[in-house]
Structure formats: structure tokens, C-alpha cells
Image 1 (cartoon, one colour):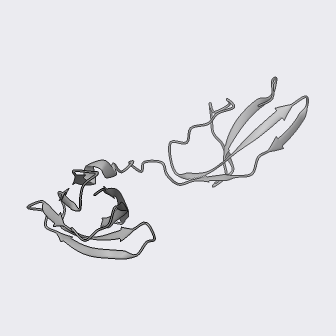
Image 2 (cartoon, rainbow, N blue to C red):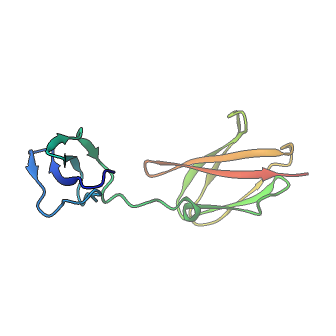
Image 3 (tube, rainbow, N blue to C red):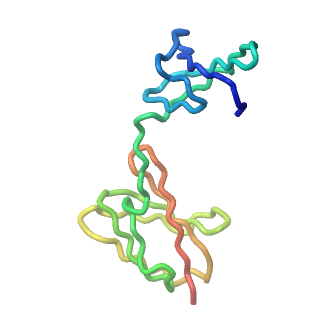
Length: 139
């Protein structure tokens, strides 16, 4: 940020000026590559092009994708999801403890009483997104 500087944003994909985009901050409305032309005290420079690839991607709410309750628990807990999927329960070292298949029509009641006290992670896929859910077991 430099006082007195002027800004003009540029679409690097076709080297065109983006009309009306002349503030210090630019919010892309579509994926592409963008740069700013900055002028200060008669000197002009152009920033490197920056690729923007996340416009229009909705944030995925993992809290809604899968629920585990109660949490913390004593090794007995319920996995609730609206999709049929397979989940892997791993310990804090990343070692697989159990693989769990969950049917979308009902909740899966896990009874893993041999789990020692500790932190575990339930890992599964929702489409192409990997879901991680922290589970705390206390005895």
C-alpha cells in the first residue's frame, strides 16, 4: 500500500484492462489470472500475474456431512451421515484401528470398547473431498 499510487487491474489471460477496477483491492468474479498496474510518482510497474481458481466453489461444511456423538465418549458412539460410505478410524499416529461401513438409511453404532483413552480420527470421502472427524475417547 502506497499513498498517492494509482491502480489498474489487468486480466492476464488476454492482457486486457478490467474496466472500472482501479482500487488497491480487486475481487475476482471468475477464475483467471490477474495483475495490477501500479503508478506512483511517474513510475509504472506491473505485478506478477496471480491465478485465481476458487471462484464459485462452495465451502463444504464437514460438520453437516458427518456427525459423531457423544464426543468425547468411552468407545461407544454413533456415526450419523446422510450418505452410504466407508470410514477409517485411525489413532493419533495415523494407524488404522478399524474400518467402518455406514449405511445412509441408519446410524452406525460403534462399540469399540478396546480403544484406550486418546484422540482418534474418523476419515472418509464425501464425493472427492476427504472428511476428518476428531473423536475423543475417555475412560
